[in-house]
Image (cartoon, rainbow, N blue to C red):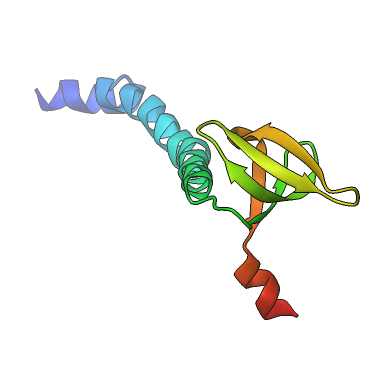
Length: 106
């Protein structure tokens, strides 16, 4: 029995070790790639849920505007310099600056 264990150890044919490497690789990918992306997605969803009238936003297309109305899936923005009113999807909003943040920086 001991000779079989030693010979398996020397040849590297232990079944436990052959399964350990793929599990280790999957765990590294999970912690390095998947988990940070899930955190970022949850943070973005929370930001979209907290939108309110008066927030300054930037869309994925690069438009800067102020929210003037909210709908279920859409947001109405007032975009300078001509104060155009545009309707964009909530999912296209990338970042938000509230009026409180603007007032404290002036």
